[in-house]
Length: 371
Image (cartoon, rainbow, N blue to C red; front, side, top):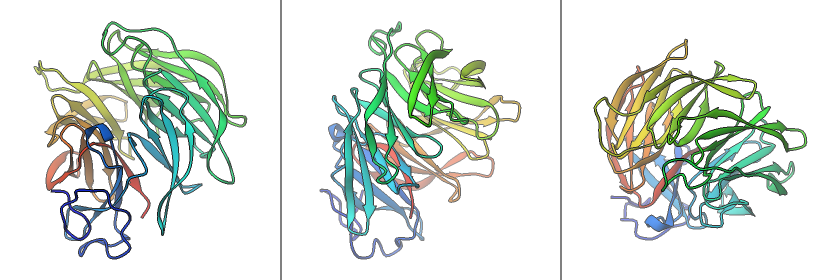
């Protein structure tokens, strides 16, 4: 059962406590933020803290950040940017102060159902993917305030795919900057495409647009991540439940390997979900929603993926997770199950369930926060 800082069952949002967080926790401990969906009973933005005795507790809840299904943090500006995934979406900028959470600004997402947000390398630009409208928006960041500036640069897409109920039109599900900061990639689940937009970082403008990678028809690409050292990327496709290793070459993404995220012989319905790569670029983690599992892959120096493990997610529809490598843990949000589960990370990168099961309705997104 989810509890407040003083051990009571949590039935309503609480603001940041001013006293001790918990008898086993203090304000210097590891902290993870949890965004929630209101439609699933979410009360806003929660903060979890790790306790010395083990486990996690809810340190505070902020009701002012609704439907924060994805976000990021700017150390340069000490601001959090969270999407508000409603039909006519928005992007909010928030600051965590000694007085509690404050909303510093809010801008339209210039599209429906924003679901992903990313900062460029020097945190001067911010991009948003809008799932509902299939569009993306790029904002310059005000150097003095850290707030996104209007007008945003917007780009759309056209087309559809063979899966009628999911690919009726473009559906942008991810946007990310290339490691060399020359390209902005736009992952479109609805059209089975990854687009590359040439980026002028100095002016914050987008120039030419091209198809960097055309995924297999009906596969539904969802999230793209880059290897920390090698010129490689990995793409999870939601509808096909696959991982694809891609060679990165001047805006193009060239397929090198495709591998299922599901166990051999599994015939049920499942969707690929969240994706993460460890800091060394040696392990890839991905969720399966339907099979309700986490899959762990080894990523070797030649760029090949090899399945190491499937472990049950501990709840229905595992949507998002965070790697806490220094603490040797992984925290996972089970969206439909309304729970947060914790796993220990072994020396080989494989996972083992810990005795942690936190009820948190609407849990959709996790983000490590500065202490």
